[in-house]
Length: 131
Image (cartoon, rainbow, N blue to C red; front, side, top):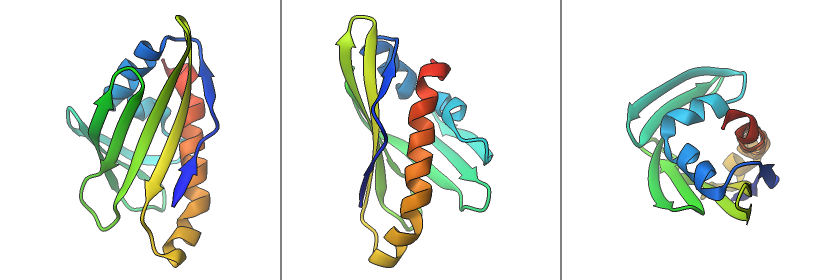
């Protein structure tokens, strides 16, 4: 299953956006209002939970400055990645798109597609105001 957020314009350089997303503690400021828990576990790993959902641990798996950040599931039964793609538009602006990829059975994919789509859209649209 592959889901993409809308492309979001940010009035910051691609390096500034990359630096922001590289620091996992900054993800707390991107989370939706229905977050019930957020905890930085290590400098490259954090745990979060949304109301009514299980806790999820994400770990930074790859960082290619200034264009790409890859966070992956750390533990748990589901294997998925959250990828931040950053494209430079000019020296002072860039475009960000979040991509969710995971290998799920059809039933699970059908159940989580809506909530995950909304979640990555919320994360992406929060970036310009958070930086």
